[in-house]
Image 1 (cartoon, rainbow, N blue to C red):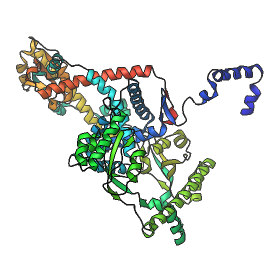
Image 2 (image 1 turned 135 degrees about the vertical axis):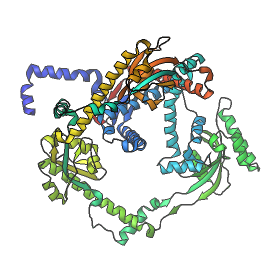
Image 3 (image 1 turned 180 degrees about the horizontal axis):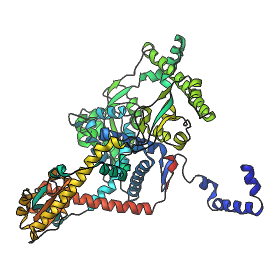
Image 4 (image 1 turned 30 degrees about the horizontal axis):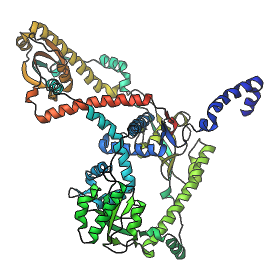
Amino acid sequence: MLQAIRDRVTGIVAIFVLGLLAVPFLFFGMESYMRAVPQDAVAVVGDDEIPGNEFQAEFARHRAELRQQMGDDYDDIATNQPTYRREFLETMIDELLLRQHTEQLGLVVSDRAIAEVLRQVPQFQIDGQFNPQAYRMALSAAGQTPRSFEQELRQDVLARLLPGAIADTVIVTEAEIDRHIRLQNQTRQFAMVEIPVERFHDDIDVTDADVEAYYEDNLEAFTTEEAVRLAYVELIAEDLVTDATLDEDELRRRYEAARERYLTPEARRASHILIETTDERDELAARELARELRDRIADGEDFAELAREYSDDFVSAEQGGDLGWIEPDDMVEAFEDALYAMDSEGDLSEPVETRFGWHVIRLDDIRPPEGMSFEEARSEILEEYVERQREDLYIELSERMVDLVFADDSSLEPLADDLGLEIQHTERFTRAGGDGIAANSEVVEAAFSDLVLVEGAVSDPIELSRNHMVAIKVDEHFPAEPRPLAEVESEIRSLIIDERAAEMARELAQRIVEAAGDGGVDLAAAAEAEGLDVEEFDRVGRNDFQHGPEFVQALFRLQDPGEAPELHILPRQGSHAVVRLEAVRPGEPAAASDMERNLARQQIQFSRMGYEITGLIEWLRDNTRIRVVEERL
């Protein structure tokens, strides 16, 4: 192919093509052309990028939250489709746009605001009060440090500052609240003749010809879903048998080489008083106040009382300055240097300057390093070595699997024989997925791909998770096909009966309307002639769904009859009803409680805020260059 191109692109043609290719480089340079989008970014928004690993982590977190919220209703395949992934990326782009705009406006998140948020988190509380130790333990369990968590929290709060500011500018008048209550709390008075559909069932005769005609006219409703059954070869690292072992000397050498790993670091419990630099207090004044407080504590004044009175760290001030246990890298460098330079419990540091202000630090307790002895760590060292050998073997076999499929994708047998693996089989499943490996969206997608389904080839190896890979082949294909008429005959008869009965109910409703006359004055007589009763309803609201949501929605779409009631035929729970709307009563603002008025205010405010934010995001999108790399999603 390359030679063919060389043969044809010569002379004037070659010069013309090369000239076109040169234009971008002349104006923008090779580097800008090649690096328009960073290699690890899924999107670039203005001057900021959304890295692929950040998108994947946020998307995984979002799906985990959905799985927890929806339970059995959660659809793993639907939430992993390209369109859904793109929609989620769009929400991340919107958040980044708002954060960028917030920063451009000069809005910032104060330390006090962060402290207030932290105080409200239940996981950081003991007996309803913020506890520094609980805070650090919760973060440690999540694999985060206070520094990284508070930075993420600051970014999150920053992204919500603008919507909050917009919400504060939305003014809702009392007249608007009154109007909302009149409409939302509106009730309707009506008389109704309900026509039960069951009264017609015995009068309906469904022939075999009727069933067959319905079947032919609605064939798609009685068609099975396309399905497959797969054969597959599965490679799992932890199932690989290895005789790897280590002698005692090697185990001990590995322990000594990684001794620090088996020791918990020294921890120190500390309290502090933070003096910030403010508009009223410059750096020199802050340092002098810190020095004064340090001297007062040294002279015997109570540290905790002074912390409550003077400390600008509002979280720890409530605890008398207590920061709980601190390990290396928990705090900023200058703070930790001063803390770990002290020797004894009760020692006070000289005032220490950090980016947060000036600190007076007291060492409250020391917890020495704790670790595992060689005997305690021995089994762990051996297990990790064996696990590493398994992973190495897995990597070797997985590469071999790729090579074997590439060499021959017509059968799984060479693959199974070469790797010493068993050919397994799934149960039948549709495009919605199934059990086992069929619960994985990539397996389902591959199973119904042209390569595997149409050409009958072995799929490229699919990595289900870390150190877990499969190659699949369609074992049996079940095309979508109509279910036999005999199988669905009774279902069709019931459908025909319901449809005809509903139509007969509507026809009867129309006769009642005609017999009742203008305004429905003779509704009771018309109903009685058909063996039916008239029911009176004085006040039915928008949320009275015991009548059925379809009926209530249709009822509230009717115009106010004023002084001339009219008859209407409305759908009601699979049948029909004749309704004479007699009065429309607006809600009563004067009778609404403060809670109801506040709720109405919030609903109006939220609606307008959503409109304003949507408009702002559209404006930001129109004025910001956004580039998305679809294939990296």
